[in-house]
Amino acid sequence: MDHFTEDQLNEYLDDTLEVPAQARLSAHLSECADCRARLAALQTVFEVLAALPDEKPERDLAPSILQNLPNSRSGLGWKLVFAFQSGVSLGLLLLYAPIGVRSTAGILQRLIGQVIRLEIRLPAPIDLHFSPPILLLPHAFSLAGHVPQIHVTLPVGITQSNIPIWLILGIAASLLFVIGNYSLIFNSSSRPKK
Amino acid sequence: MDERDLAQRATQGDREAFGGLVKLHQAGVYNVALRMLGECREAEDAAQEAFLRAYRAIQTLDPQRPPGPWLKKITVNVCLDWLGRRGHLTYIDETAIPGRDPGPELQIIERELDRQVRTALLSLPPRYRAAIELRHFQELSYAEMAETLNLPLSDIKSDLFRARKLLAEILRKI
Image (tube, rainbow over the protein chains, first blue to last red):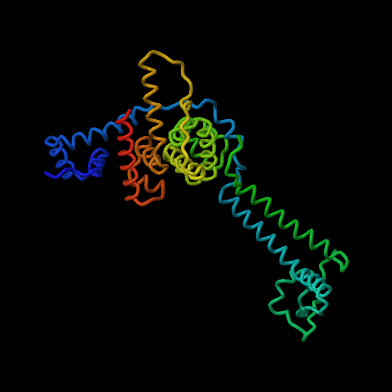
């Protein structure tokens, strides 16, 4: 009679063999000392593992675990809030982008000694005070020959002289806003503090 | 408040309720980590990380089911990550079993046998250890083990059966 395989003996002990196979193996075991010995060795493993007692932790782990719990802003709702905030921040960045293009063009011009100017021609009825410039780009952007220029009506409070300050403040505030909320909502520290 | 209420409230973001679950299950989670890692301090750290991971994934907890098995499955995966980072080195800590007063001779023999079984477990490759942990201590089915470890069923059975064979060989020498 063929002996049963290790896999079959394992599945027999795990009680996952099909009923006919289980019956065949039971019958075979009554006749085969070799398979009985192999089964007994496996059973010993089951027994010693079952007898292994649990141990008590040496200290109460709860206080340090609770102390290290991340901010509770982890639910879907907060992630949506984060997405909204990111959108607002991106919008702010885009709002400043055309102004930045102008400043950058000026810097490039000074750096490489070439005339690089961009021109945005605004449709007459649209007032830049209330419309983010970037929204106008697709239909207002044009190159004026070799001398592109930007003509932007600056929002209230922004003047020619303080553009760089507004630009830096706006971008920095937007980035800090997004990064700060990311760390709060997705707190990703993987190694806990002891 | 019973465990189900704690689980329900924890899934709604209640830190205090999650703290209740920590208190209820810290010993179980610690024991999983101790069997997988073998060193008390490391087991405590792994248990802590497992609870933090569980907290971040609290939305995946079904409050209608006991949270213990869910926490222990997370712990097994945390331990596998730790063993991966550790580069498969195995620490066999002679003091891994926290101190109890030496009692009668039989108790000492039993403790020695426990220590040897733990040492035998720690001599297995990490995946085999995980298979033994999930099948023998968490009593998961093959399919549940495959889901927990994200491995094909055939790999799970192969790991488990080889782990048992290795353990049987080690135990024969004890």
